[in-house]
Amino acid sequence: MIILLMGPQGSGKGTQGQLLSQEMNIPIIGAGALLRDEIASGSELGVKIKSIIDPGNLVPAEIITELLDKRLKKDDAKNGALIDGYPRDARQLDLLFERMTPDLAIVLELNDEDAVMRLGGRWMCPDGHIWNMNSNPPKENGRCDDDGKELFQRDDDKEEAIRLRLNIYRNDTAPLIAGLAEHGVNVARIDASGPIEEVHDKIKSILE
Ligand SMILES: [Zn+2]
Image (cartoon, rainbow, N blue to C red; front, side, top):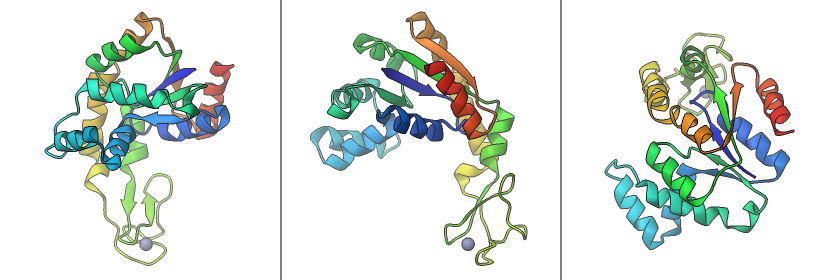
């Protein structure tokens, strides 16, 4: 059973993927991790990928699809896999269907305001302690409870950066969902605004 996991940042895709992976005993295959692993392997292809990524270019869909295909043939994926972060654009979608038709796409839906609320509240302590102004605020504003150090916000966690990534998802990835349905993939849209357990239960009821 090949399941695509889709959803914007903040939708809990990573957490839900891990829960499903454990329960179904199938691996999560992430497009980003495939590229990183290939680079780490030191293979010829890995060297080529690094030379593409380092200056900030996007890895061609052909390469990512080839890595995915290779990964799916490994033993631990013989009963299926959860695929995260792929397809990301129309080209990847076309290449995917040249090789396989996934059984199901789980689409976690969350509006931008909720995503910004979940992601935008994160502040870091220089020692690595993480606080969230919305869900787990420190007692004193701007200071770490554990050591009193001044908190800072990473560039990636700032609201404008989050909104930029959400826009990319809406523009490039969300339209693919219609394409998946047209190719005969079962698409399950799940409201991801609730707590982790509640969302997980909704996914499980679809799998049954
Ligand atoms: Zn701290």
